[in-house]
Length: 182
Image (cartoon, rainbow, N blue to C red; front, side, top):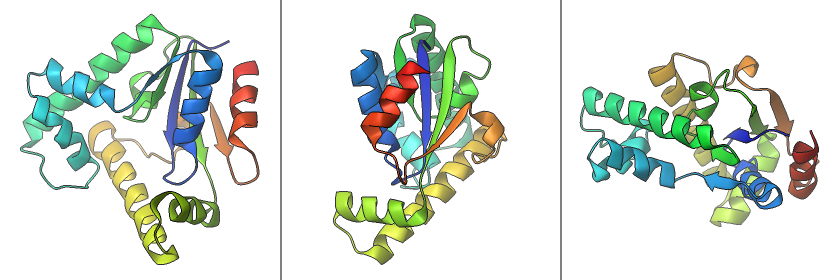
């Protein structure tokens, strides 16, 4: 059994829900947004939690490249420290790259077809099809840009992941149980 799972996910694929289920079933700690705050505190700038949102292209408030680079380095430090303790599910924040080659670590990419993603976003955000598709396209581009800018990698490169799971026809409970058994 792996002691660390990293989850990269397409917006609307169910990857966030899968991470929660995986943590529940395994009894592992779920590390997600709180990681941002820990990294911000590490560099002495709690308001830098907003910078990650900017790195994902959502607010346009990243103060400068040097500060954002320091913040990215702080995220790397926090992710590594958490991984060294083990028994953790880490969602996003380029954890598949930060922990590349790390022992007992399984890097997962959760995907789904556009129709599935649109339906999931429509249900969760109560938006129409056009708005859901626009959010998905913007999220995909922002995630790709983040990985490209700070890690010089292609977010969609399958070699960054040990396993890619399409949630179109599989329920999340079955996927989580299957991953635990892996």
